Image (cartoon, rainbow, N blue to C red):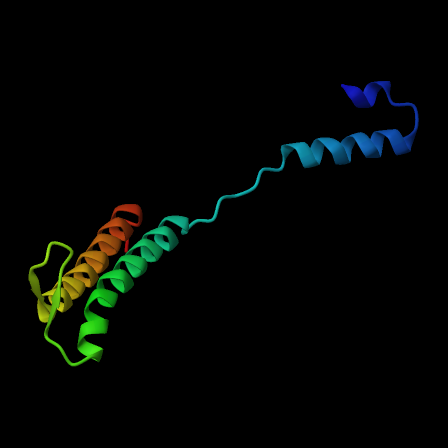
Length: 102
């Protein structure tokens, strides 16, 4: 409609460029969900692994928890492995849900 009022070719071209820019929408990143999930699981993995790394580096199999009880470090390593298993299964299930043909 605005191009009907334009008087010169320059004004028509400028209007067409403006409307083209307005129509264009930013396409979202297709795999943003996987980046977010992997980031969350990696951070969780590193935090839990950090609880086990310090006592093992000092050569101890137990460390004292916040409440004063002894925590067996291999249990923390088992929890870390469990986090990795859950992460892989969760991401695979999400991938299959979003890509049923694969």
